[in-house]
Amino acid sequence: MDTSGGVVRKVIPFGAPVFDEREIQAVSEVLRGPILTHGPWGEQFEARFAELTGAPHAVALSSCTAGLHLSMLALGVGPGHEVIVPAQTHTATAHAPEMCGARAVFADVDPATGNISTAEIERRITPRTRAIAVVHFLGLPCDMDAITALAARHGLPVVEDCALAVGTRHRNRAAGTIGATGCFSFYPIKHIATGEGGMLTTTDAAIAARVRKQRAFGIDRDVAQRSIPGVYDVTMLGNNYRMSEMQAALGVVQLQKQTEMAEQRRRNAAALRSKLSAIPGLRLFRDAQPHETHSHYCLSIMLEPDTGLTRDRVVLALKEHGIGASIYYATPVPLMTYYRQKYDYQRGDFPHAEFIAEQTVSLPVGAHLDADDMDYIAATVAAVINQG
Ligand SMILES: *Cc1c(COP(=O)(O)O)cnc(C)c1O
Image (cartoon, rainbow, N blue to C red; front, side, top):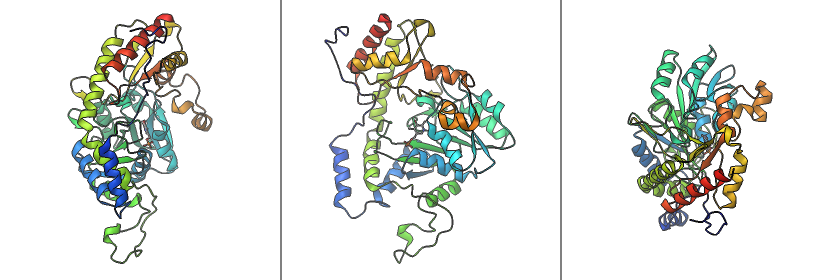
């Protein structure tokens, strides 16, 4: 393949929903019917998602961020409390406790996986700690044996941020069913797309009931239970964090394709990993071990510092060849202005998160791509690295 002169050029977006006539049909059905929210598609999406994960309770929401916020509220997180979160994550993981008036306390990550380090969690537990939030980074499960044991010793609940973890499993349990709650995202470039959308899973019936209420203003009964429309009581504070029927219809169809899409991601990731492992100057995060299932959100390459290549230069060079590379995540959350100024964090406070932020480039392996795309990505990465 000639990638040097730009003769062979593909266009490979980092992420794209895999929609076909089935999604269009399902959304059309909603639009032709009378119910746009609180309806049967939402109930079906929750039931199918509960089946996929094995969670006894699944509550559809407007986003993963809504799920993280409601998780913190359900666990009693409030002013004066601390919640330990990974330094290398989406800002939503940290914002959730902060939105409750608590403090997000950042812990550095394991350089081999990007997942939160158990030793770093332990170092940051104080009498004010109220919960631990973990992120299955890029779809590789966290060390849930060690984390749940540590949490149990201190009587702390664990919230799983599963935004990148549809299909992730640890010792044959789905991500999102190991901690107190799991929060999933259906943002367009995630494993399952509904435009915006999220799901909270839990094994705890009381948490599920509370989240159902707080996603809809804290109203004491749902629409089906209101014999006279508009007559209801409000028993607690709540938000409007509901999912619409159009979104749920997309979700139901996407779940029918989930096995197929997950297999395509797995094939893509395996092919790309084997091709990239031969390129000097690159390091990869470790792959899943036998007791783990990776959801393969993307495949990140770490540039060895001695290559002299910068992350941004590689991303731009790939872009010139039509490849939509991304960076997960380009700045550790504690070094973002809001957190840096509020808590006076400095560069050097989270060395592993900072190394990952500065030296990694995330390559696409989504279900919208195939084996030819992986060949093209690997050849282009090799050419970019060789040119230095
Ligand atoms: C995308 C993402 C979120 C936010 O998800 P939304 O559904 O957009 O709220 C939270 N955490 C992680 C790790 C993410 O990647």
